[in-house]
Image (cartoon, rainbow, N blue to C red):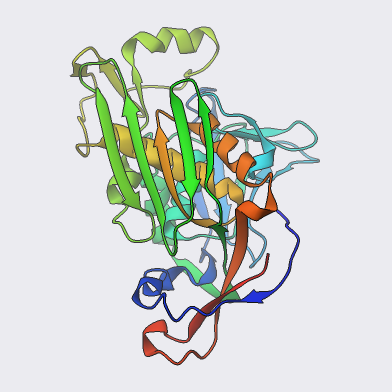
Length: 328
């Protein structure tokens, strides 16, 4: 994603200790060695092979459909989202797509992976266990390689809101955090209403990464009638029937339902191209609402700026010689 560039240097002496929370994110990262993953697509039901390779600084996250010989590069950015109904699908100019990218993108976001080439031999990222857990384990096992190239961060400057019926989402400025305040409301007696609030850069994300996708038992046939959920099973999704969880493995954490929505939100936010400084509040949202919000943010240049994190001597040891400068 490209934006007009102007240079402004910020005096960050007032950020102090809070800036330390972002120290691990300061320089662009990729994985140290390639990762191979095999699984099934949640909606397509097709077997998938996926390889994640190290990539150079400033290359970003790139998908490559290796089952197609030409025009097979797909960039996961907000303006390439072609469908966000039950998962996030991105499509290139030739009409080639890759779907259900949100859990992998959420893993990249939470760990801080800026650059990676993902080779995939089918139309859908494998669902694995329905969470980002296996992606995270594989990435950490491969190791993270840090470059000397500074990262870029989107800083929200104005509050932006978007709503559809009873669903709403907003984002407003926040200094050095990405707060996600998310609530879900279900008529189901087991799920009911859940709410959680995390700071992506400060919170322990284990519960977020480990939380699985879920559905109501009565919705399974509805999905299959529209050729979705064809690869779904009790091994890759929580299925709730009335007041009962049908899976042998019950809940991994008390707020697993809403925590999975936060994982989805993280993954969809990463389609902005960079990590975000802002405060999000969402009620009954999902992929579509997050995408609509980002498009609205980027519709007006005054809504955001892009900060580059780099090293420079600052007369405060707490800042560890770091400062931010705006490049947009």
